[in-house]
Length: 67
Image (cartoon, rainbow, N blue to C red; front, side):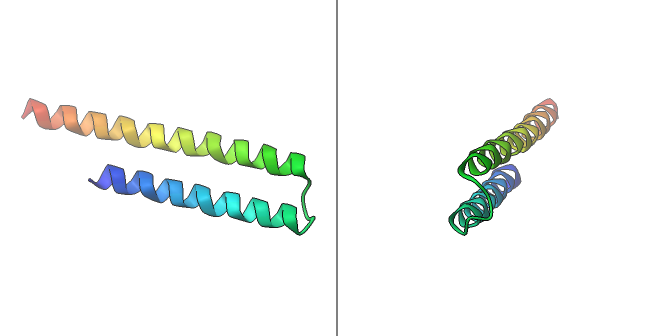
């Protein structure tokens, strides 16, 4: 349960970051290319942290099964 809640939190941060990037592009503070690059970077970081959470969940489940 905690792992799933953590992943939801990570996704919420991703959404906020993407919203900020879109607002910056709309306000002409960044270019469309910067927006796309930023969205890709945010997604890459999101994927990495979700993978880390998945690994921790897997390890904990394994530990519990051994008990």
